[in-house]
Image: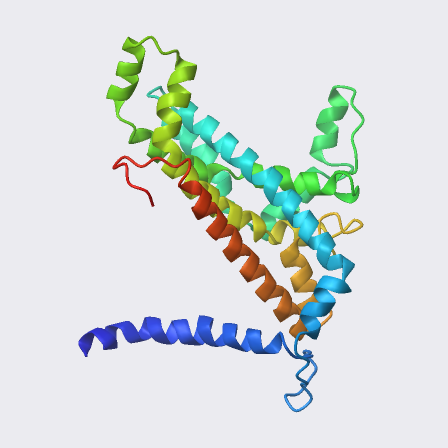
Length: 293
């Protein structure tokens, strides 16, 4: 009985903050509920929201496309940058602790509004990026206002915040036995071959962990796109991430029923993607105990 008493705050929080809102959202996804509707006005419309989403909403497909491009470009480059810097910082040299902290610092800022505002100012037509390019005689662009470059600025911002996976990679590198490198050196393996045949296999569980975590984060991107585009997903829907489109339909156009349907499709898509990652991970992730996960 005492165990249930101690567990009750968590259970109440789970029910009140997670379970009940999710079930309510699932119900609303089958209705025409609007922010201005009373419960008496709400009509059960079945699968109409989902039907409209897949057959009559071109912005839905635009949001899916933008999100896929954002995640599929940003996540691999972010992990590559994190691993490269972790390899450089996995050495004992003067000032390495300071550089570890400096590289991790951008991740502490997270998806803050202030950071997005600064980023938008840097890439504005008269921003610091264009001033830097002008110093070398290069004509800059209106990066955040050009549909050809706006999404690229978001991707660069995402890559720049590689500090969190870098720290995890660094912790994983510390766990690789030095004896493996010594044995490889005795066998005549070059540093490049040691990286591919010692470091990468031993680090594969850490790579997998970061891949899953950063993929989910990539698909959940919102704040930077909202701030840089002023909540519109522009210019010309070039930064219309899925979460931003969900926000627009729910909190700008007040179509909560349709927004709930968007949220459930998103949840299922993330779930399927996670299952795929775990299913394929067993083919390339190597654990020290030799067991499959």
